[in-house]
Image (tube, rainbow, N blue to C red):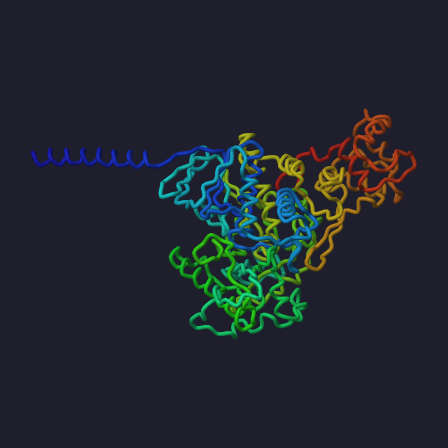
Length: 623
C-alpha cells in the first residue's frame, strides 16, 4: 500500500516537472502574430512580401540566408532572361532601380545573353531597400522547423539566432526555391517529368519519371587586369582534374543560341556583368550539374552541394589555366567563406496540384481556353530545359516547342485542397514542360506579386484565397503597373494601358501571338481599325441583347458604337461620350464617320460598359 502511494506521488511530481519544463521552454520561445507568413525570401517570396505589405497587411519573411532575391542574388543568376519588352509591376520597378544604380540601361547591357545584367550583391541591396516598408518583417538566417494547421490559419515554428520562435498567421505562402513547404502542409504536388497521359502534351514522355533539371553552382569572377602578374587568387589544381570535362565549352554549336559562339572570350561574355565581373552559369560543357536532390536527406544534400561547387571550381581552374584567362579570379561578391553563392540555382522543384493546371496546349493556343481571362503574370521566354548532365533524361527537343508569349492563370497559385495556402515561386501548378519557361526571373517576380496581392485581399476581405474575386486581384495588379496579358505593343506608360488590359482579359478584343526566337510575342495592334463584326462577336458573350444588331466588315464608327451602347445602357447619349472624350485620353478625333481603332474602342468599352466588372471563376467562366 505504501509502495502504491509512493508511486502515485512520483507520478504527480513527474507531471508537474514536465509541466514546468514545458512552461520554461514556452518562455524561451518568442511568439509573434502576422497576417501573412512567407517561407523563402527568393524572387517570388520577396515580391509577394513587398506587394502585400504595400497593400497594408503585416508580413513576415522567413529566409535562411542573409540576402533577399533568391536566384537573382543569393544564387548568383544575375542575368535576366525574358520580359525585356514587358517590364511588368515589381520586375519593372526592380529594373528601373538597376538603371538608376548603374547610371542607365546601357550600363547593364554588358553581356550578350541578356539586356539586363548586374552584380548579385546589388540585387540584394535593391530588394532590401524595396522591402524597407512598414508592416514587413524579415527573419534572416532563419530556418523553419515545423508547420501546423490551426483553426484560423497556420502556426510556424522556426529558429533564428539560436532562438526558437513561433509565428501565427492566416495566410502561408511557399516562396521556397524547390517547393519545400508543399509536403509539410500536405498539398498534393508533381515532381519530375509528367506522363503524356497526365498532361495531354504530345511532347511529354509516355511514362512519368522523377528526373529534375540540372542545377548550377554559379560562380562570379572578376577581371583584375592582365598587368597583374601575381598568382594570388589562382586556383590550385583540383583533385581528379580532367580538362576533357570542359573541352567543348567554347566549341561552335550548330544549334539554338550557341551557334553564335566563336571563341572563348565570347563564351565568357555570355554573362559579363558591370564592373569587369563575369557570371559563370554556362550550360554548354560548362558548370551545369545533375543533382537528384529530391531523393537526398539534408546531410546528403549538403555533401552534394559541395560536389556541385567543386565541379564549378574545376571549371574555373580550366578557364584560368587551360583557356589562359589568368586575369580572372573569384570575386568578393558574396560574404561567404568560399566566395561562392549562398544557394545553388535550382531550375525546378515540386509543383503544386492547383485549381488550374497549365500545360503547353494552353500556351500554344491561349484563346481556345478561357484561362487567359484569369491572367496575373506574363512571360515571353521559350521552353528551356537543362538535362545535358543526366544521360538518363529522355531526349526531348524542349526549345523547339513553339509558343507565343503567355499569361499565367491565377488558379495555378492556389492548391486544390489546402486552404489559406498560396505558392509564389517555381512551385506553381504547371506541367514539367511549361516549367521550362515559367521558371525565369521576371515571371517568378510577377507570380510573387500576384501571390502577395491575393494574400492581402484574402486577409482584408476575410476570405480564403480560392474565394477571392479574380477581377479584384487583377485590378489591383493593373494599378501596380503589372501586365495581365503580354501585349508587347501597349506599354504601362500608355494612357490606355489599363483599359486595354481589362478589355483583353474580358476577351472582347484578342491579341495575336507569335513564337519568335528567344523573346516570344503577343501583339494587340492598338492602331488597327475594329470592324463592326469583330466588336459584336467580342461583346455577345456578355450582352446577348445585341444579337439582332446588323454588323458588317466596315470599321466601327460613332453611330455603330452608340447603337450598341444604347441597347446595353439606354441612358447613354452622344453628348455623354463627347464630354468625356479628352478626359479618357482618346487620341482619335471625335468625328461621326471616323473609323475607330482598337485603342479607342478599348477605352470606350472599358469606361462605359465595363465588362471587366462581370465576375468570373478560376477557370475563366462566368460565375
